[in-house]
Amino acid sequence: MEDKLFYTEERRAEILSDLRVTRKVSVNELSAKYSVSSATIRSDLAELEAQGLLKRTHGGAIPVSGTSLELGYGEKERIHKSEKLRIAAKAAECVSDGDTIAVDSGSTAYFFAEMLSEKKNLTVVTYDMRIAGVFDAFEGAKVILAGGVLRKGFYSCVGEFTTTTLNQLNVDKTFIATNAISKKGNLGTPDPLQAEVKKKMLEIGARKYLLADGSKFETTSLVDFASIGDFDVIITDDSAPKERVEEIKEKGIEIITV
Image: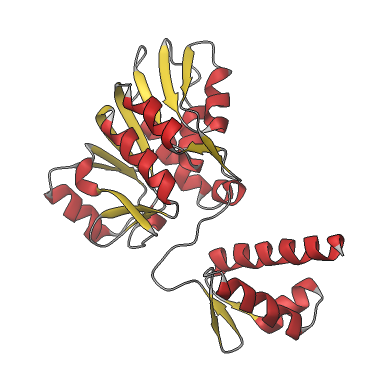
């Protein structure tokens, strides 16, 4: 029974992963892929819809309208990887020896962290355990980990302990990632507790950088935590909507496309 339950949950997780990439799945295709009956797939989709994770359609399913689903850490690292690496490399150029920086959670932030190995005398504040581990391996970095309640599956700490730690600190530069940037210029994340941590990360930075690949634009997520106007510099790639890039420039915000 336990093995059957495990396989069911594993299959449903894979269905969500497929949906995040393809934006549409069909019962027939999923039935063939997982070698189960159409009735089993329809049962999977019904359960996932009940959890608010997708919307069923005739013959399949689509993402929940208007709200981006959150990918797992591994999925995030694979999707739009080349764009994220270019953004991370450009962001790394903005860090100087001796800086005190705050680094957000997420795949682009992780790639950014990996590119700072040659910097000297860095002090790094983060609430992401994987990113803390990256910096811990660098001889020239001192790490302050804002611990708290571990956000399961995402290696990041959230909650009152995390925000209380951040509230005592000030840094030269904050590097923030986002799950979504709406047409109105609001930045969003699926998790309310992480939204509070991101707000605090922004508050402690003297200069604020947003790292966001083009796929994040014109999407929304559950909780807004900031707006485009809160940042000094935005680093994105050349797939970002041209109209949005021009709007950002008109607001007097520096935007760099790579």
